Length: 214
Image 1 (cartoon, rainbow, N blue to C red):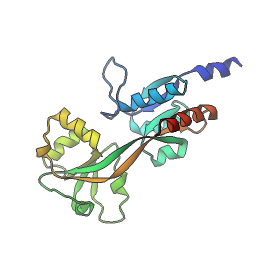
Image 2 (image 1 turned 30 degrees about the vertical axis):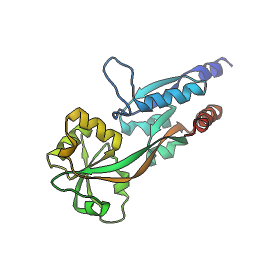
Image 3 (image 1 turned 45 degrees about the vertical axis):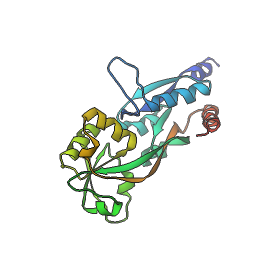
């Protein structure tokens, strides 16, 4: 009984990847940002404790599969869907492409001959287009991508509205230095749990999500 009781009281481990402004990590400070706050609120409301593991995006699915993490917050991906159960939606964001002033575009069809930057292998919205698909290139990060876009070295950058606003402030790039934006659609940000998480714990969190109207 003692190991079971200890496991029940142990904090749930939440794996997050550090993409500002959703997750912000600074030296010698606890992680912060909307994803951190959402996880804390939901788990605490379910009467449980939480701890965080900040890691590269590519490690998230593996951490759930190995038990290194119990939960994560993010977009549905093929890798995560294989190893996790979806407990529900916590946030809905606008997925968009912001284009350059040198090669502006206002519709998805106009992007067919554009070079579009993406961070961390994202951009499923465009990668799934059946035809007239733009050329996708990985950028080191959104700061780098924003600067390349302003200089005309990219024709567009795929991101969310919150990320665009954050990195515009961080880089000091004025909105007038960028071209039109194309809203690709709404993307759900969901809370995922490893498949073998205690069913009672998973149900507590799912019920908390439901009561919160998410």
